[in-house]
Length: 440
Image 1 (cartoon, rainbow, N blue to C red):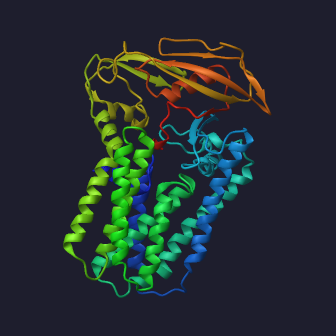
Image 2 (image 1 turned 60 degrees about the vertical axis):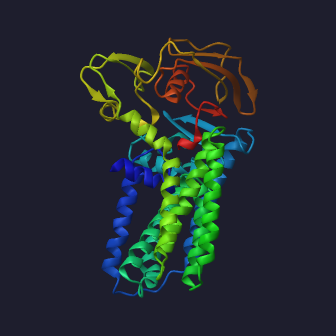
Image 3 (image 1 turned 180 degrees about the horizontal axis):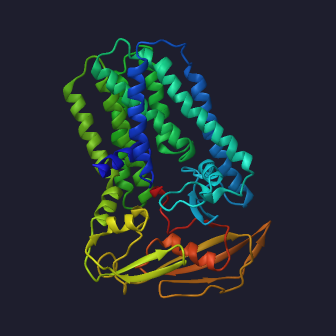
């Protein structure tokens, strides 16, 4: 059931960590409870434009932080980056920015927590900006959350006054999904993320709904748009996994919103509602392909005495051990305190073939330390060769060529470990082709 809910939450608040799932469930229940508590009380309404203005400020905040990092390192605006710093790794690209997550990294740092094993908490960005920058972002984020709750209690509650139970439940659900998605995407996604753009469309539709305008024709328009996006996603699935997934998720989110909006109308046509449900399930199935792959991976049974390959952050080394008892990859991953979506366990002969050709890729490394030619040591799992560093502004650029054994777990963590062993503690990897940014 948790895996199913996780896959559902990914439609409007995608990511790797499970904490989003629990936060959304808590948020939905919380909204339901405060509605029951305050439904007979009236408060001065909060105008939606104040809430909207604060949200836009939060999005602009994350956007400019990303642009700053790009300009600081002399990169092109569309470049994707992986940031290694403070023992953590994070990624960011203009259409899915992560740098605003540094507000959480700063908060965790104040409490002495500098590294999170199963999630990207933004600690990698600490040090790139003065502390007050992330402190300001933290305050702005808290204001958004408070405003979302106040708007629900004051203004949104008025909309529910003349609605039946079905309509009330669905309208509360749509508010929970849209507001949660907006808040999450403001620090993890940004302006150009598909969920923000689709949220804007349906917020506009919701404004029409509030004004009593008929939405019938808009339902048909957006149904057509969703179908087009879904087919475009399927077409591009052979060329670009990230692009295809974004299209599929976008289509599925449109169908989800259409179902809830349409089902909350006073009068509905069952045949059209069924059509929307079928389209939603189809989109969900396509967009959840990665979730199903992860679930299948987690369910793989590890035989007794099976060779297992894992990565130790403590030693910065790939380790080979024998499994002592029969269990699943998912269970062993939890025992090790790792995130299963990073494929932290490899089983030679089951999840990989050790004699298969090695993966090869080239990287552009930006660091604050000069690296002499071919200074990296090699192992049976990873081999790094490099050119001499070239000075560029206040940093150094180095071209890396990397060979990775097919049975390496957590490829990015292994590469990070090799850099740390060479005292390269703060760095950027530019346009890393081996990394799928659609996973974040």
